[in-house]
Length: 250
Image 1 (tube, rainbow, N blue to C red):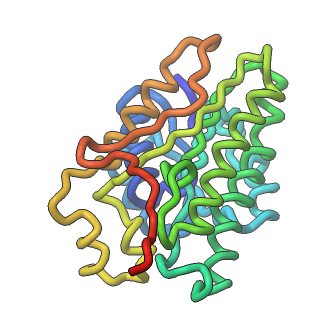
Image 2: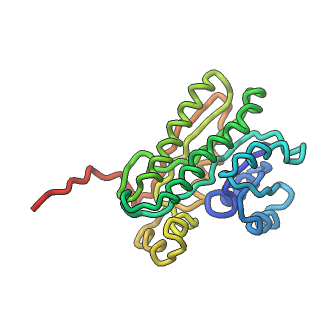
Image 3: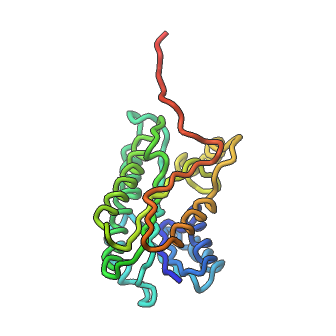
């Protein structure tokens, strides 16, 4: 049995991770900003789940997070850096700078501060797993993806560089890169609650769902300690990378 810390566990991927890991026989620390969602998850999953409010944009809260846990929960075997978001889909010259700052603060700064808070105890034990939630947007550009894609490209490179630092140690780091995924709040958040626009993203498709991503995470945690998967790129069969776009005149 492992103790697994999941950020952004109030919905979507994070809640699916919590459910799957508890089903696998592990203990989960579920964090997020919406306490009522965490309490509902606790009611569903019981004593195998410990909940704690945490905004990954709050550096001080991250620094004091592990010491503030009950002693029996302070050893973290697996860190799942799941908290993240996309905001807006307009061109870069029209983008809201506050939205850019929020994406960087959550997807980059929050992730690296969480990693720095947990990694030392893993190094001391020479054991641990870090799963970072990236995106195919970190590899394949698309109009309107500017800063979101840039943050996910950072997640990929940061994950690889962590492995470079950790070479020879039994600490595994994987960048999980999903493509089109429905059944989460991702598009609702991106489009500021515009449900019709969010649903249009998935019209006529059979996207991945949060349980599919949790399935991959479950497999990664189950692997032997000498085996590292650097990255997993996941897409539904209705999606593929496309060729270059060329705008022609006339």
